[in-house]
Image 1 (cartoon, rainbow, N blue to C red):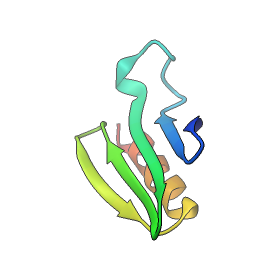
Image 2: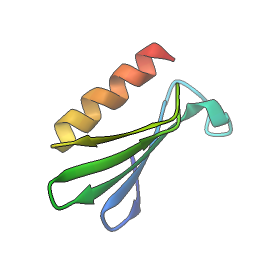
Image 3: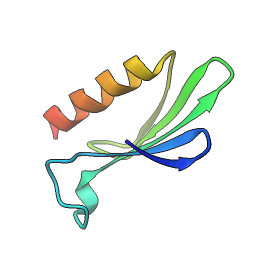
Amino acid sequence: MVPVLPDGWRMRDRSRSEADALGLLGFAQSSGTGLDVVWLSPEPRTEHLRSMDELIDAATARCSAA
């Protein structure tokens, strides 16, 4: 996870090179009730998570699935 805004992060699969577009998992931003996430890989979708721990778990699962 790389900070891209004061309250936002870009998520990458570190097993892929920085130049590999398939390694970009998505973006997350803090909201009043948790985190709003836009997933780009392995399939596009949005999700609302309650905590940073949930975000890390979800990103890790997506890395494993890719």
